[in-house]
Image 1 (cartoon, rainbow, N blue to C red):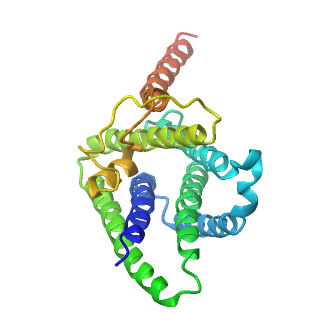
Image 2 (tube, helix red, strand yellow):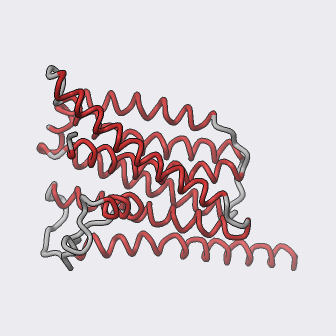
Length: 264
């Protein structure tokens, strides 16, 4: 068994699995069916294949940091999509089912492009060596099943909650995942020297190693990093705070508008 294959596939599958499972509960709440997920999966996989196949070209962009910059843009875009979904889950504003379908499809497709590309690139290194590829595929399957199991557990856990608890949990998990995306994207831009690199705020590698199962789960849910810089931590907290602040602001504006309409 190849441990690297298990860890890589598990990490990418966990992140996508947790995100998709929560978005599925959102779709279930609005009775959107599963057609949007099929379109998202198809578009995401096609996009990942195209992206991985052109990674050599992309890597030369922006003075040879194209991969980091493009991945960061994808993750920032996912965060913005999740922020809008959180507002919609909070019923601010009320939107049509079609608009929500488009947003869910875009979010899942972008997440699959980001995660599946890493897996495709990893396995492309074993092409031509059937013995090693077979071991890598078997090891990756273990990681895949573990990741999907966590995603399924997340889905059924949310669906089993009392109705009044579902919405806060959905918003909370999506806000955490979105803030994690911001932290990961910021780290990529630091690696690309687009953002300043400074000493980390702390080092928790001995307490919670990133390569461990709990570490991978923490990475999937909120972009856990054992050695975050002040900029990463600050943007993570800022991105996390944006969700409740925007919800509160939107409710205040909606309530004020409603009061003014009634007084006219």
